[in-house]
Amino acid sequence: EGLFRVRKTSAGKQIVPANCCGYSAARIVAPNNIFGGPPSYPHCDPYNAALAKTSLAISNGAFDYKGNAVNAASSTRYPIHFKGAWVSRTKVKGFTRITKGSCDTGKMPWTMRTPPP
Image 1 (cartoon, one colour):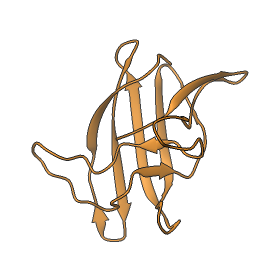
Image 2 (cartoon, one colour):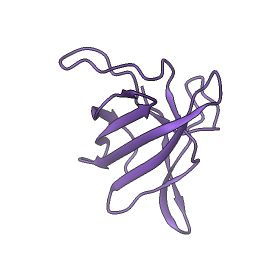
Image 3 (cartoon, rainbow, N blue to C red):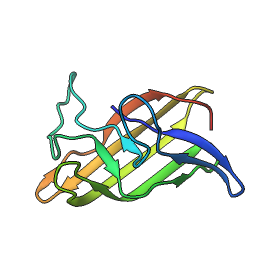
């Protein structure tokens, strides 16, 4: 599950935290712990991957974040790569990769429906 919204700013369009669905507007949430279908992915964090950064620039209909996520229970930070691109007006495809200690999920592909960038 992932959750974010697109906001138009003076610097261009950005991904920012969403304020819906039981989540506060504090963090952008990257899809994490993707279940079902081959291959299965290791679970480096049992919680949703909340990014440490509160906005991501959108450039040419895409975004690419390499930085940290924050564990919801312990506030521990760990490396994450969250990348995606709009393939239609309302569909974005990408991947999340988490590396936490010796755990490495590899690229976990996902598809989300979202407002256009």
